[in-house]
Image 1: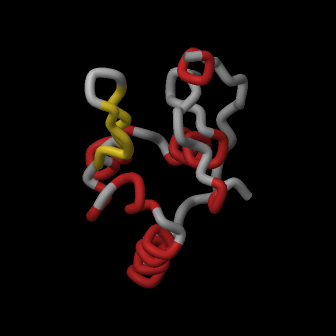
Image 2 (image 1 turned 45 degrees about the vertical axis):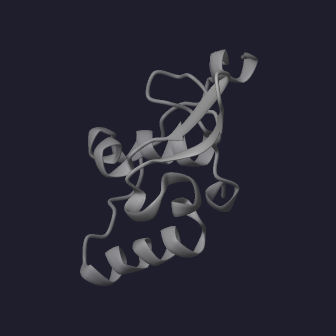
Image 3 (image 1 turned 45 degrees about the horizontal axis):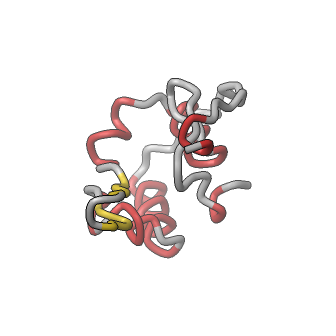
Length: 101
């Protein structure tokens, strides 16, 4: 409960323009695969149930194919690296240790 209600004070930081050429996109897909994004977010990053205890809790990783386009690059970097949602709340299973630095 404490972790879900925690508010983090991590400012948004401007990023250098992200590369858009096919090789850079392929490298991003490779990194997402080898660093395990799909282990929580499911095949194709379309969301998945991480844990479920009948009648107690259900933890679901969001569908990134829908969520990512609604975030700015800076908001997405803050979510991945610091585990902070757009509204400043803590994300339950983030930051992703592989992407922290």
